[in-house]
Amino acid sequence: MHKLRGRAMSRAWLHPTVLLCLYGFCCNFRPSEPFLTAFLMGPDKNLTDTEVVNEIYPVWTYSYLILLLPVFLATDYLCYKPVLILQAVSFVVTYSILMKGQGVLVMQLLEVCFGVATATDVAYYAYIYSVVERGCYQRVTGLCRSAALLGSAMGSLVGQFLVSVGHVPLLYLVVVTLATSCVAFLAPWFLPMPSRSLFFHEGSVPQDQPCPDPAVCTRLVEKGTTGLNVEMVVNFVQCFSRRPLLAWSVWWALSTCGYFQVINYAQVLWEKILPSKEFEIYNGYVETISTLLGALAAFGVSFVRVSWAVWGELALCMFSVVIAVAVYLMHAVRNIWVCYSSYVLFRATYMLLVTIATYQIAANLSMRRYALVFGVNTFIALLLQTLLTVIVVDSAGLGLDIFPQFLIYSSYFAAIAFVFLLAGVFKVARCCSEESETDSTTRLLINVSTFLSTH
Image (cartoon, rainbow, N blue to C red):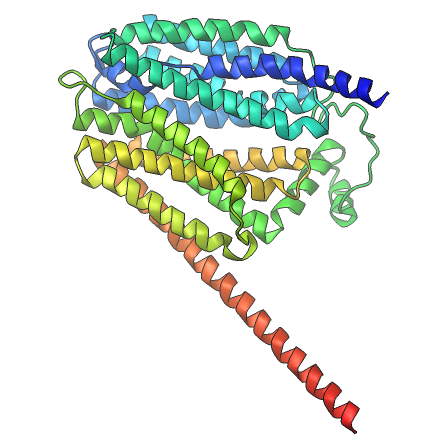
C-alpha cells in the first residue's frame, strides 16, 4: 500500500514539475538580453544613451512597483495558473514590440509589458507548492530554480556565440528570444489547475484556525478588521518582530534595490567604455559566467557551517564591502575587462548572500509566512529603487550620466556595510557580555556551593 502511494506521489509531482521547468527554461532563454542596450542604441532602433538610460529603462522600475502588490494578491486569488499564462503572454508581447517597435514611447510601452512579466514571476515560484505534497518542496524548488538559471545562462551563451562566431545581427537574437517565448507560452496551458493557494483558497486547511496572537486579533476586530486582513496583519507583526529575521530582511530589501539598479544599467556602462558599433563585445559570456558562478556559490553555501545567529551581521557587512568595491571599480577603472570581472564578482557575491538570507528567513517560517515576507521585502526593495531611480536616473530628477550613477551605487552599498558593521559589533559585544555574566554567575554559585559544603 505504501509503495503504491509513493508511486502516486511521484507521478503527482513529476508532471507539473517537468512542465514548469520547461516553462522556466524557455522564459529565461533570452539570447538578446545581454545585448539589449547595444540593440536599442544601434542602427535598428537608433536611440541615444540619454533616451535609453533616463527615459526608457526607469519605466520598468515604476511598472514593477505599481503592479507588484495587486499581482501578488491576484496570483494567489486566481490560483497561479492564469497568472502564469499572463506572464507568458507578456513575454511574447514584450519581444514582439522589441522586434518591430520604434521610438521612445513604444519602448516605454515595452518596459510596461516587461514590468507585468517580472511582477508575475511570483506565480512561477509559488505555483508548484500548491500542487505537490510538502515532502517534495525541497526537490521541486531546486529543479525549478535550476531550470530558470540554466535557461538564463544558456541564453546568454548562445547569444554570444551567435554574435561572435556567427556574426549574426542583433535583430536575429530578438527573433530567437521571441521564438522561445512562444514555446514557453504553450507550457502553462497543460499545467493542472491548483485547488488551493496560500491565502485565499486553502483546500483542506481549516478556516477557523485560532488566531496566532489573540491580543493583536482583538484590537483589529475592535477596529472592524476581520478575516484574511486580520491574519495577514498578525503574520506580518509576528514575522518582523523577530530581530534575526528583521536583520536579514532589511539587508535583503536594501541590497536587492541596489542589485536591480546595477544589473539594469551595467550594459549602458559597458557600452560607454566599449561601444558595440566599433568593437566586439562579450556581454553574453559575462552574463553566463556570472549566472553560473552565482548558482555555484548558492549551492556551496549549503555546506558552510557558520553560526549566522552570532556572525550574520558582520558577514553581511564584509560581503557588502566586497560588493561596494566591485561596483566602485566599475565606476573608477574605465577598462572593460575590469568592469566585466567586477560585475561577475558583484553578481556572485549577491547571489551567495541572498541565498543565505532566504534560508535564514525561511528556516522557521511556514510557506504562507515566507510568501508574505518575500512579498514585503520585494515591495520595499522596489520602493527604494523607485526613489533612487527618480532622484538619480530619471530625466525629471538629476538625470545623471552613467559613471556618476555607479559612484552613487557604490556609496549605497558602502552605507549598507556600515549599518551592518554597527549592528554586528553591537551583537558580538552583547553576546560576549552575556557570556561573561553567565561565567561570573557560575563561579559565584560554585563558590557558594563550596562554602556551604565545607561548613
